[in-house]
Length: 109
Image 1 (tube, rainbow, N blue to C red):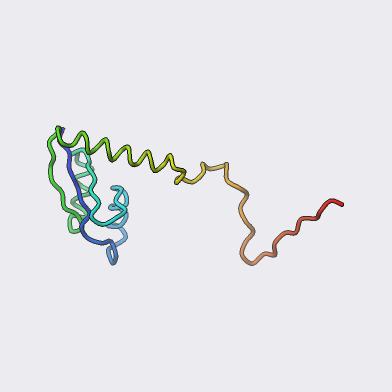
Image 2: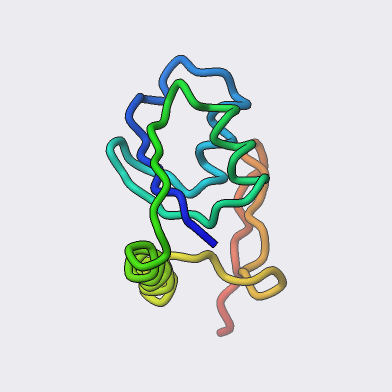
């Protein structure tokens, strides 16, 4: 199966919210960023939806293997650095609403 090398070449500023969501869903965070995806109908549909913001080319399997693995390792390295939020249920209790007075803890004497 071949792969697609996709590059974000145009800013998302002023774009419709649907286009922004598609680009975010593809994992792009910066201009001129390049990602490699498997060539399948879902990825082709995403590219078609925002083709005015992207450039892409087909890459044979021999070239795409190293690129796809390096992209996956960079994603896993980012999550290992603690950039992900804590899982649900483990976070601290929610703070008081903005209009409420703060609770004062009484000290034991």
